[in-house]
Image (tube, rainbow, N blue to C red; front, side, top):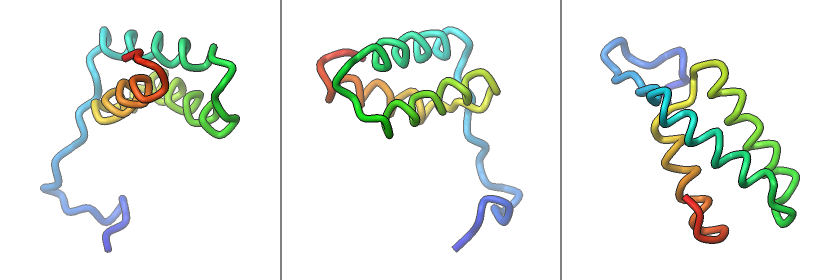
Length: 77
């Protein structure tokens, strides 16, 4: 088992999302946060994604997850 700090040097870097995609993801997060039917745990997770976007550590896989989540919760995404 490798820990994050033990990844081999040749491991592929996760791709950060382009600015436009980050903006779309931020808007999607805001729409999800406005819902009254999501748990506090999900709200916390979504706030974490917003922090990742602000820090520049939001990745393509995060955006895909958010779009899939939104579709499962009610057709957004």
